[in-house]
Length: 281
Image (cartoon, rainbow, N blue to C red; front, side):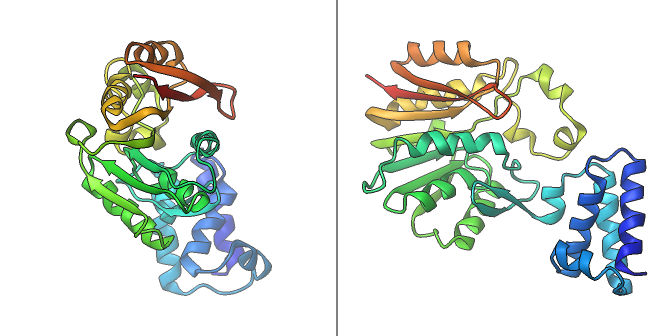
């Protein structure tokens, strides 16, 4: 079987089973199997596949049919300006979260060395992207998932930043180091009702630990806000990603804990997504 034949077969199979982007997904799977760029495959459509590659292709295709996200099948996802390794232990980096990077960079002067804490680091995509942009800063990244910390450490090595970031497998409740200039977090914030309505790709494949924010979606947001108060310097910044209906409740929790809200920014869909606040007391 040649490239063009297997691409046609694969995209027809995914399309028939109502998988989004069947042509692109099929091309990316073949790219992974042959270890060649998509462009190279499309320009050399008559090359014959080895039997081993056909078997691997069919295995990956079936995983996609089962609604497994492409980021897990391929083993990576592009975020901000870089590529990050991903597996089922970590949430897939999303374009909306790049808003957290944009907002945070405004409070990290290029020439200064700031102390940063990333709470619930997952793949490490947020903190690693920030340190790439602000190499004079130093960071600690924590997560309650040991597997997630291992993924983040691998990504740090991949980007040659393992000496700039300290990764710790710990819950923020138990974390005691303080005097941070800035804390960032994309905590689980999906409530129990919304969790049931998620697409199968998310609901059945991404880690529930990184998605579920409890009954009202505020459990982990509140925990980060309350504990960050002990960990931040006075006038330190707390920057959070939130659910698009959580602006008012999140603002209330911040005010009650002595924070001033600098800005609430909207994501690519025009939904409230990122809160920048300052610890006043």
